Image 1: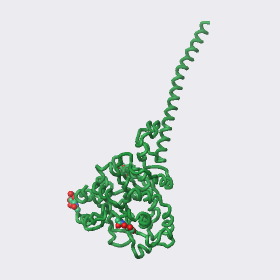
Image 2 (image 1 turned 45 degrees about the horizontal axis):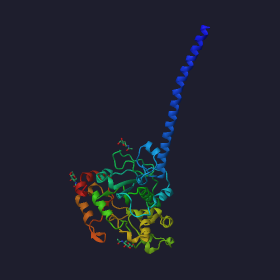
Image 3 (image 1 turned 90 degrees about the vertical axis):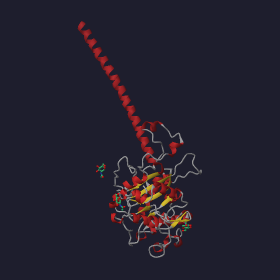
Length: 379
Ligand SMILES: *[C@@H]1O[C@H](CO)[C@@H](O)[C@H](O)[C@H]1NC(C)=O
Ligand SMILES: *[C@@H]1O[C@H](CO)[C@@H](O)[C@H](O)[C@H]1NC(C)=O
Ligand SMILES: *[C@@H]1O[C@H](CO)[C@@H](O)[C@H](O)[C@H]1NC(C)=O
């Protein structure tokens, strides 16, 4: 009898200990499940923000989980990340949104979007870093590379995570214009971008940031090269099948390296009227990137164009490619000539400051440019 009682007592005690151990385990399970859901929802939200380009503040993970956009700031902030899975159709559609009320109900600092079209590396990134330093409020950067290229900039670089989703580009083909439109569209997602400059990896800035900003922001015209050239390399590339959208008198040629304001940038990415004509009838030796934007914008907005480019290039040696400058070309006199020996028109006034950028420079010029950038360019 006594033995039995003892047995029951032990049984009871084991049962109670089992129960008291089992209870916290279940609580812990629930807590883990809850944590899992919270993290899951946060991740889904983050992806939503990235893919849809929905503007939300750079808040913490947890905040973005519980917070709905409730202030204007939340609607106008650019996407957290440049990476997204939108295809060009989706991207251009989203980028074409335009406010219908003039002015801005908030303090908008107009920025210049510097858009780099490159195969991969940016050999002059240290020079650009020097140029940008101290002007963080006034610029943004976008880089289009070969899709397989992964840039490797340190977290302190102005180029860190500035790559946009890119596709293969072939020289002189429509895929080149596609890449330029992709750069414009990604930059348009940031409402503070007002001017858009296309640059290559072989480009360098010829003036300091303040001068470039003032020159571009005070110009009444966008710097798209556009001229009517007789002969085989100009009018000779026109194809009558472009009628009625484009006639020969409207046909323009110009450097691919342009600067455009926000309105023209939107006109470029929203175009579906001229695009098919150029895609079909300006192929191979036509070099569509020299004709599509200049011609289209000349037809649509002739009075918005300065008809000249801001990027100096030396064609004097002839051939299909411009001269490339190496380290033995670099002297103070070389830059003085580019900066002063030209005349052009700025806001209907003659000026000698015609170029803000120059190409093409070989990577071996980097050191000498860096060492003498204050003397040459004032930065
Ligand atoms: C990337 O950067 C790191 C650190 O600067 C360097 O060690 C590495 O070699 C770089 N990789 C490439 C592919 O450039
Ligand atoms: C640019 O060229 C167009 C014609 O192609 C002309 O209407 C416009 O006035 C020119 N722009 C300037 C600033 O001269
Ligand atoms: C560039 O700077 C270096 C170092 O100050 C100097 O030795 C060199 O002569 C300069 N080069 C030119 C082209 O001015």
